[in-house]
Length: 303
Image (cartoon, rainbow, N blue to C red; front, side):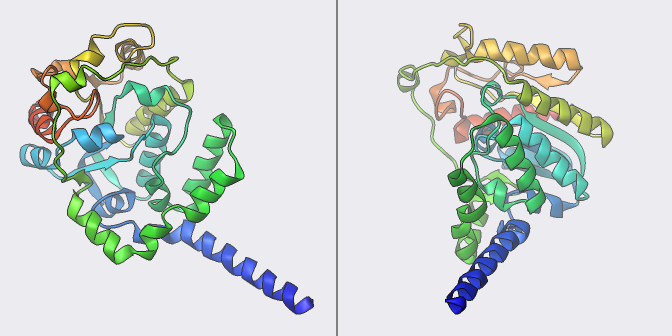
């Protein structure tokens, strides 16, 4: 019986050690073309874009690199929220990354959700201290469960680690300097006009506090900061109900003006928000749309 107990105890210790090591050092398997570790390895970045899928699908790395002076890096996670964008920025700056110009996703819907990490790639890219801090933040606003903890700290990214040579080759072929190289087709106006519009309850203070923290970090590290809204399809823009995208965006603009935070709305450019070929859906740009938009954006930034 004692032998069995010792064996079980040894197994538990070994498993615990493996989990701790994975969460502390797993970033060595994060890949070399996308994510926070690669951004930190750059040392200095002239143009750093941090955002959600709005930036992954909306920022064209080719157009930006061709039209901007200096190096460009795009850091995007699906569903990335301001509260975690701030933590990502702070994490990289504390590890020595120098940033000259910073561009932050100005997307209204990410501010309407409680803090939560929906893209577990973020857990692969960071160390244990970041993960614990992120978990504490999520726990403040969510009824987290043991299964959530197990998914994030135990099972998340195991496939990427175990299949690293293959996974790294695939990711490397799809990203360069964080920018997606996949070109997705646009839609027709007829299809986009059939998509439903929803309304949200409003902006979460915790998410606005994330934006506040980004402003503070930019001032502390002497970084030029600009919040950027990527184009949205006209049907979404024409909805002015309370809780609609346009209504929430107006609240964000009010916040930015109160904080003297520079922002750039998509309407600034002569971009065709009515052309379905420019969009995958109501909020994401197609390959054609992002190339057209980013040429305009790069010209604006250069000036």
